[in-house]
Image 1 (cartoon, rainbow, N blue to C red):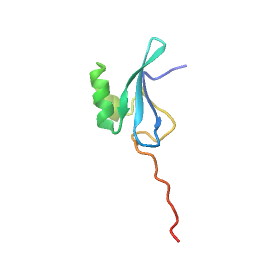
Image 2: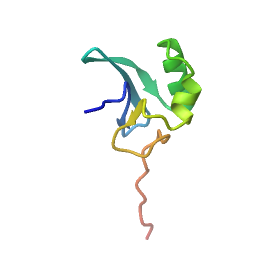
Image 3: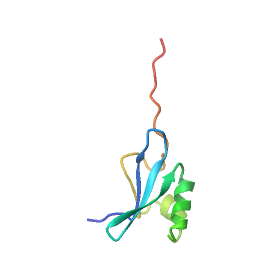
Length: 82
């Protein structure tokens, strides 16, 4: 079974997504991304070549868990007004 080396976890209720890097059967936390720019910067710091292409190019190197890719904020509940 193939596992992408970069995991962007589900959106926190307060916003943002935890990002981890899978290496040799473990996951190393890279930080809390609130945008694609944050994610690109985490990957750049981790030494990944061409992080812009990895994030924006739709490669199989990134696994987006649960939520829509490239979305970092939780949907706000809508309340019906009387």
